[in-house]
Length: 405
Image (tube, rainbow, N blue to C red; front, side, top):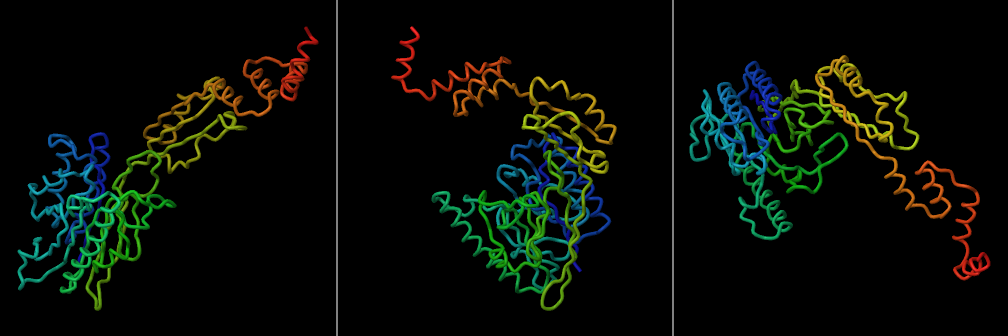
């Protein structure tokens, strides 16, 4: 039996440091209880490649990796260049009871005894507990593609197919679990309950991944936790970063056991104690939307408890006073929210109505709208003259004007 703990996309930054630290420490505490054989981190541990070594986040990352390495061997891969960059390579100098291995290029590792070795350090006589294939974010620099972007993406995709096939053939020589650790976009992955991520990055298909012949595929890059096919897992981000994120956050635990002709596994998704980030938006400038009597809090007490709440109301400027921001904020806090922020977006009626005048076809409608804008009344005589101007030719208007004079 091989037990593996898998997480990804910590995105450490000093602004969210305390929240991320809380969630990762929760994972480490669970790891101490589970006693895994391997800890897998699938990239993007930092939010910026420019994270300074003397920052609070960098110090916490080193502490946490050291603590994980006191539990089991740890493997990590370099994630998105704009996030991890090469900063994660510093983890090679972090010490623990077991080894920490960071991959900036595709490679295959072997878990042998309590250590991680590559094919050159493999002891042919010793038992191999697991094979770990490390696939960081594919880049043109690594594959030395110097063609146009579209052609380069296709070339990289083709190269990845060959790479998966080669690693799969190598792993097939051993009768032990094969774990693939990757950070890239897999075709068909969801970024929300209903929305798939399409066309933004180099995309690898599930058929291409199948070439690796891996028993469990641990993925990073997409922040929604999900299982694709039967053995491809995105652990998702470990905490909620943006307002409006309501999906569960956490990490996976896999139990793998050899059984002819393959490997059986159980997966368990563990929720982290991340904050709720609730965003409420209401637009009271829409037709028939009244502020009075509306339900401003559509969430249950359980959802509100300990949540961070951001409220945005779009209102007419002359009706903004109908919303008591302080009272509304107090009501959320009394309901159990940890923090509440109320923002009003004030829209001048004149600006909106004036723009509506330009969209009207009939002159009489434009006159009526302008009168309403200025809070004036328009007589039937004026409207009749507007109709006359619109339906009478220029020559006829000149004759009428001559008769009047």
